[in-house]
Length: 305
Ligand SMILES: O[C@H]1[C@H](O)[C@@H](O)[C@H](O)[C@@H](O)[C@H]1O
Ligand SMILES: [Fe+2]
Ligand SMILES: [Fe+2]
Image 1 (spheres, rainbow, N blue to C red):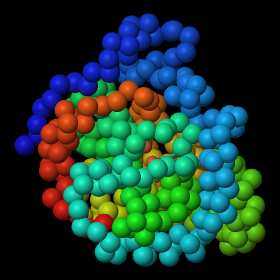
Image 2 (image 1 turned 135 degrees about the horizontal axis):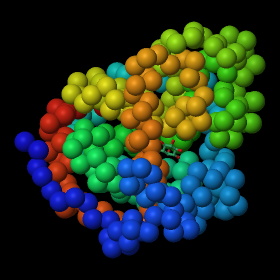
Image 3 (image 1 turned 180 degrees about the horizontal axis):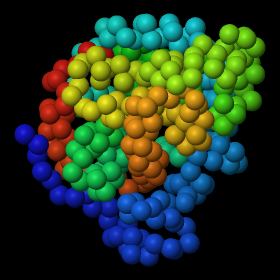
């Protein structure tokens, strides 16, 4: 049974903002979601060149990530982690575990990860109150970051977080800090460095290997544990970090009909994932019963990870 709770309250400030849509620093999209122009550090969102201490950490992260994510590496990781033999736990236990991990790739967030999950879920619930599946999708979308945890082999940051991209074909120019791919061993490999590389026109993203990280891992966990979430939910989880596709429009030539349909929901979701990152805290205890009821509806009590 789904437990009903009040609509999220983002405080008087957010309500005030909604009434003055054209205030200088914000942009209102058609579903009423208020997009802040600056993040909690006073920079634009996803500004990878802003001068700051954090920028150095983020750039170094992408340098290593772009050098080490190769076709062979991804293949090995998929094989290893699709065994799902690391841990047995519930979705909520995983949310709590995530509080111990830190994401070095994100220029917009330094709050605990559970805050980000709930901020995203509560923001999307406000605008899409009847789509309970998308509330839960938001809650779980970053759970794959547990790969950073000691019980999962404590993978390095470059193998878990950050934007993702296909391996096995040319790296699109719009990928952040693209220049570091020059040192990736696939960069000069003629089998992997052309527009199609190992793939073909319209082959479908399901047949494309993405750089290894929290997206593909959480997709595997959800699918193999037989979630009843719809295919759009799995698509969101799997490709939410694929900015070169959902933001820049690259790699369209690899998509099939189903991908094109699912991309619409991913684009809706992305606004909430990105722009809900803020210092406004969610009262975990208050919303927990609602999310537990959704977990019960769409997942088994314990999952294999
Ligand atoms: O730094 C962030 C973060 O790691 C997110 O979880 C991921 O989805 C984004 O694509 C990335 O830019
Ligand atoms: Fe993510
Ligand atoms: Fe996220």
